[in-house]
Length: 135
Image (tube, rainbow, N blue to C red; front, side):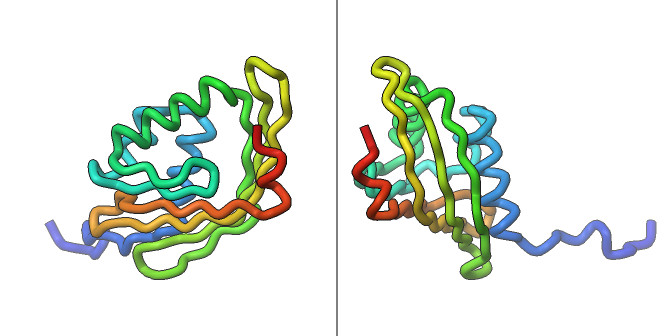
C-alpha cells in the first residue's frame, strides 16, 4: 500500500477539542465529558473555586446539572491560544430545578490540553455583572 499522507496524524486543533467538549456538556453526555479529562485535571472557576481530579470534576458536573438540567449555553467566540489551549467567550441561561430562579451567566473560559488532546486544566472567569445573578 502506498502512503498518500492520509494516514499521518493530523495536527491537534484546540478549538475543535474545545467545541467537542462543549458539545458533550450540552448533550449532558457524562461519559463523553469524563473522557475529555485526564485523571488529575484541575477545574478552576469563579463559581466553584478549584476542583482537583477528574472524579471530583465529574461529581460537580453531575451535581450542577441535577439542579440546572435545562441549561442552554452558547459560545459567542472561540479561538486557539496556543497549540494546546483554547479560549471561549460564553453565555448561559438556566432554571433552578427546585426554586425556579433563573440563572444568567457569561464569561470566558480557557482550556488547556495535554499531548493526547485531553483536558488538564479549565479556567472559568465570570463577567462581574453576571456574578450577582448566580443562585
